[in-house]
Image 1: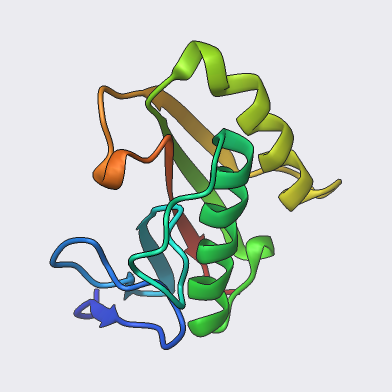
Image 2: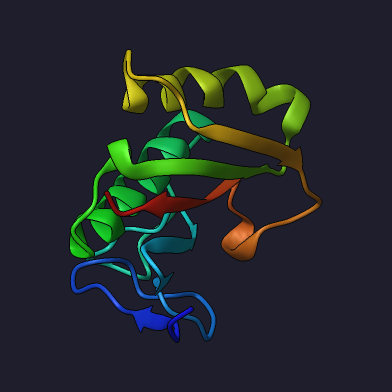
Length: 131
């Protein structure tokens, strides 16, 4: 096994804590959980509602994936964290499904949590694999 590479992606949102956008080892890429922050303005208010926040989070994940030469087609596992699970689960799923389209969906876990950074409603991280 090779040593991991810690990756920062130009144009991706500034991390809200001390971490890299992604880490890669042996073709596996672990993308840090993304928040619904705007990549061009760290101080911009978060979008209203879980669907708008899910869209922003997935857009941010796509930025990171593209920055390391991958796409959603390379994703093998997704973890989703919701602060209002019962209220937001169905709406988040609708938005999530639109991003992945008709392709086979990656494995996934979705859990309710008591809080997220910046009082976000949703955070998503993922694992991708190079071909």
